Image (tube, rainbow, N blue to C red; front, side, top):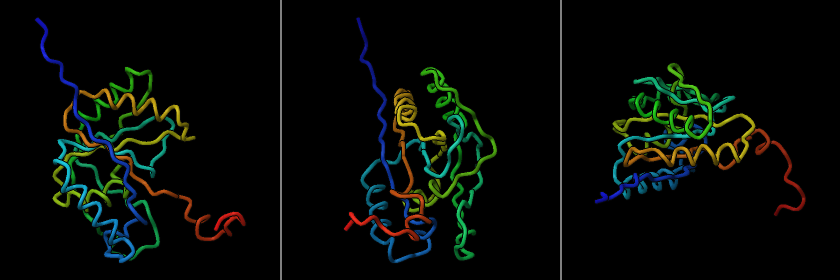
Length: 192
């Protein structure tokens, strides 16, 4: 007699975190984004843990934070002093980091566990808005240098095989990251 099979329930989101720490500094231009992040958090059940893939971290192979209490990495510059005083003491989840490494390995993807890297603003900006209590364990996973789509699709397939239930997988970034080009170059004549 066979038992019921249980497929783990994961939710996956892509979030634009806005311009650096500006959403956390009360910038009026980010008010709608902040309201949307709060609405999303209110509509979904609180996750057991968050796996966040940040556009601000590329490595030679997928790298996964595994510290139990990662520090924050203020990976931006030129902002007011309070941007470097933001706190978000969300715990890490070393056992989940090991599971992620294992499912990647099962799919033939080598990865590295990192004890030292902190959470960058791709994690702490949106999550401080969504889960201000910082009580959801988090791990962060890097992108792979070169940004080969096939590699990242394979990584996504591996993450989908995780057995943990009620995980929230977030891709966090901004729709455009070359801000220097965005702010200082002329648009091609065919635009607009």
